[in-house]
Image (tube, rainbow, N blue to C red; front, side):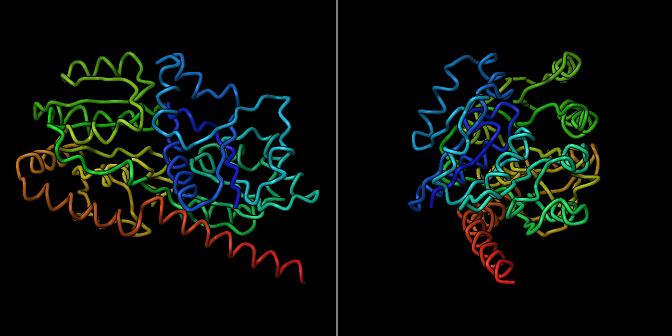
Length: 370
């Protein structure tokens, strides 16, 4: 089959986590003999920021790392109808411009032979509800939501038919343990500041525990305002700025432990959605300690795959335990890897996607016959 993915960016992962998952899914589809192409706007904010931050070398590095992946840039004059004419499946990410979302729906209604899918991997359904409510999704065959609570949100709001939960997952050909890499630090956190959505949590669950324990800590990510950089500096935490996602496995391997600090909208309004970095960290075999979130779907085995810290004091204690107890760290690594490899790789997600597409085709055929 031929898959076309409308995405904010495939090339840039600057503050754009969906690129991680999309790359893994496309690579898995290609390995199975399918065609997979991405379409992204020529002026995406993620790629523009990446170029401004790191220059064209960062884009060149993407192409060297993922030579099998192909992305086409489109402008306002791009012929989308021609681009999708030979597609079997068109998957449209929720960051796509609303007018284009509607245009692709009209193309499907006007005789398009492809299956049209809308893919939501963000919290705007609760944090910017009007943005999603105003999207024209009536002609979309399927909705993919990256968690059950988000799926239920779509169903309750009547935003689409045939809504399925489709979690993110790890590309475990890229995200894997690197046991021969030398440890150079204690703690690493890879995450962006977050527009005030987790500012207090970063201080409580990362900066203060690291300062109290005197850890060799590194932070990688973008959009850190001056006061955040000052707080890191006062805690003697090294800030390294943006890191290409393909370099993350080595960065994890160089440290003894990592943390997960979810954004507040996921904790409060969309429980059960861990976001992709949890999958990637566990796939790399680094012990993980997480700030609170509710794994309502049972994706993991908390306490075995990773540890939960209810507050900053417990985070400090658990970080100390993991760094000082090799057997505890080894148990967490083994359990986390087992869960990822058995349930949460991009291979599993492609299996799920193909099953969803088959189920959607059966439902559509039944509706057409009625």
